[in-house]
Image (cartoon, rainbow, N blue to C red):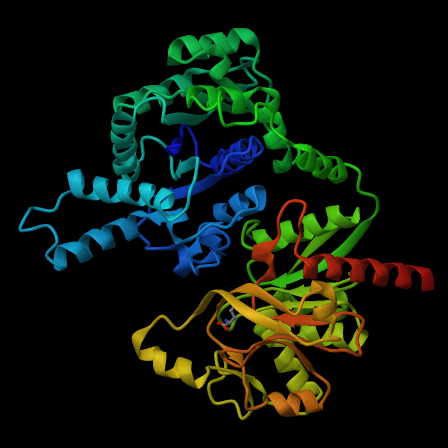
Length: 544
Ligand code: GLN
């Protein structure tokens, strides 16, 4: 079977939830037994979002093969439960840099290199690359930005050409629009949608499906109106009313038969595909989500807490773990800077667990170190992720080992106790750039440790995004004071996990477990941490 392509564009407004729509439709198609992947094409000039401030762009998601990518890839992986890769997120910056590199290498044989055809061909090449890498029945391709943006034009032209070349049975165009409710008129308005489709038409693209984001339900008359003016079938006008939870979206789409409509258009309904989607697992998850009992409050200590998407994978991991345990996890976002101002006892009052978040740069670090101290001294369940682990090590070195000025060389290059440092091999790499440890690395777990018990395995693989490591020079002395290095990357002899065995639940990871939580399959470290927080909360309230 040849690969089919679904192109998803957005109009009228940004933030319509194209990513969630793609993840939901992908999940539905997977439920029909198809092999599905989702690609995000981003029209910005950065080669990847790795250098962008989380305030600009939300979390940077990391794939197993080490791509620093858009947070939508996190939704794709959580919904589809299948890994993404470098080729799942392509930006204009990457497309141009590939073309310019080829030009410098003389690959265009003396031709003038232009947007048409060279940039367009490069975009098409990246779209095809996913199907070359693995066997996919369907590739969903989400075009970032909004139709009408100058920077989206090459992508629209690329998909126009692909529709022309591959034909209507192999491609489908879905367009997300906004149908606003005007209170003064007391009705939903279709004009923005009509204009958006006209803009799309001016680029040679007729949508097959319109997904209408709206605060209110669309009645039949409205659907017929949109269908008539936008040249689509009435049943292809899909309503996407604001949902309580993003996890309901696949079910809302299935209720409207979107999966069957898509499969029919792509000539997939007959033959290979299971006619009814198997959504039992998903429905079980949504049912559990709606029947949580009790709440457990955990603090998420970080410096980007004002931006709701900056710690997306961590907050989703908490929610997924909560559903697994049947409890609602209330995440209290604590600004790391504020901890020193108001005091940890106040900032972390009444929380049943403390997670110190990943991060870069000096701001807020002392607040994170103080949060780790508070959790250690008061034996509150503690989870350090990447910089969070590093802060816990610095705190332990200062206050347990008595190494007063211990620090990470990221923040204090001249510290007498560089407990977090560049490794020698990385020092050599500095000149060449590319100093981050990115993507999946193996980790061997020590038998009898908390980590080993939680994973129930001796060897695991987890994703990284950091420059600094726990210093091997100080490892023996830290261990002599009671730290247990329970996870090690054996190939490079690097610490992956550290824990304090005499505490209730005190563990930090150099890697990012949050990138591997899935719907119905939360990361075991998150589940175990939330469970420990629940137990702690019961203990504290029981004692009170
Ligand atoms: N800044 C730290 C490092 O580069 C931690 C990075 C992170 O938390 N992702 O090692």
